[in-house]
Image (cartoon, rainbow, N blue to C red; front, top):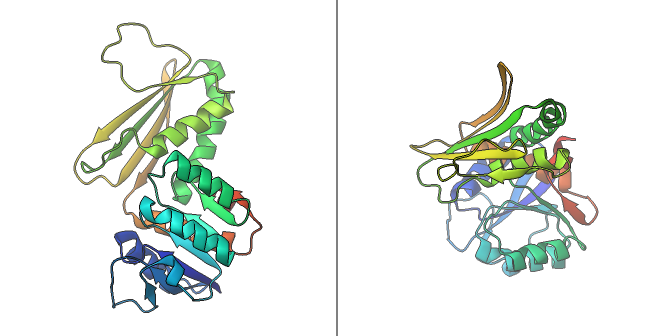
Length: 251
């Protein structure tokens, strides 16, 4: 049984995690950390990480970047592995994460979906075969109209997987509206759509002479990120210090 502390337990993803962990016979939520009080949880909730005195095997964090520093201190002090899902971290915070990774196991990924992380492997393999054969590569990502950043971190991570597989010889192009020239064969185009309530849609196109190969992932619910985090927590519990990501989880 993997005993889990949920940081950010009273947020939307905290509720998703609470339900997913309760339904998984291999996991148990033993405590939560959140500045917002919610007496309806089946486990004790602490308003700060430092106040949490419950024994656990791992922490899953879906909180806020402002809470990450204190959480890192707590995880290192208690020697607890940490699945870090909070986004928007500063460069200084990322440096602190890497420093903490020398003392505890930390798993951090651009996207916690198991499917997306499998897709990253698939597009890398496709790029190695198709790019040298002259296929153009394009990524189109779609999200809801409330998403502020563009392109998505996942689209960038997919592009980086492809570029790394090709020796980092390619560059990203995000906007062609001011360009009046032929497409550079060494570019990876990334386009963003913001509309309606789209949870998340990523399509990767490999376009060659007279044919197009498309690899696609569609998220219908944010619960896929929670499911990935729970699998990551089960994987990370008991692991030695170091930095991990979802590619380690899916093998």
